[in-house]
Image (cartoon, rainbow, N blue to C red; front, side, top):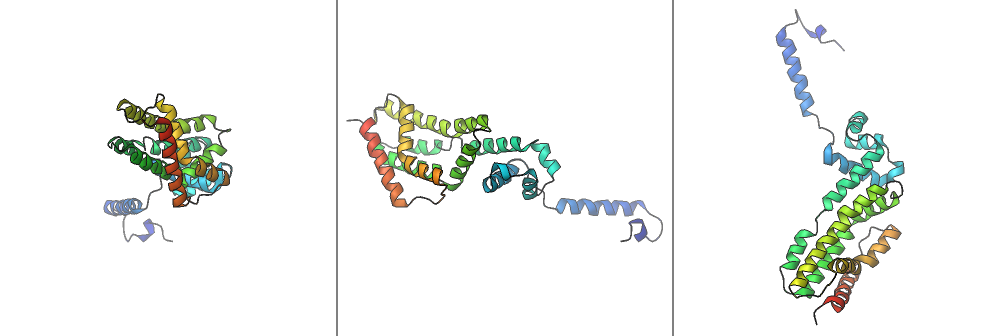
Length: 233
């Protein structure tokens, strides 16, 4: 291939250099950029979920993100640090996920119907395929990353349970239910709604959603049991 200088008829002039620089800049700007920031973490999460922590390599993440390994290491200095960032990002995405549903929950005086809707909302959120897969991934690496696992529980499960507890405390103040320990009541209601299908899918590794009629029966039984303990006479 001819060099740049070899393509010029006559002396090299400033306008030629300027023209080439503009063309190169335009081509660079037109290239699709690789993943960075939250998008990079989403790519890394997909790789971790597909391959597991042990088999995931920084090369694989960089290739999937369309960036150099050097660029990846500039954002995340090790695979351990990348994994921790992925888990923190995932927990942050689910933070306060219950709040808009609880606002609707508190806006009605029909407590049994509101509880049934809430039970179905809990099932849809906790039993989602992506949530289950992340739950299994974090659990599988909890011994290696205890602080990461603890942070995941605190920022996702514990935070949403606390928010539900606040809502049940408000219902108690209004005289709709009688929960002396709203935090415990929140834990119990959540487990009544999701425990059996969650346990089954966590241990079996099955992402197939439970049958709708099974979930509905579980939700209704959860409401009946909860109101038998906490409902007003």
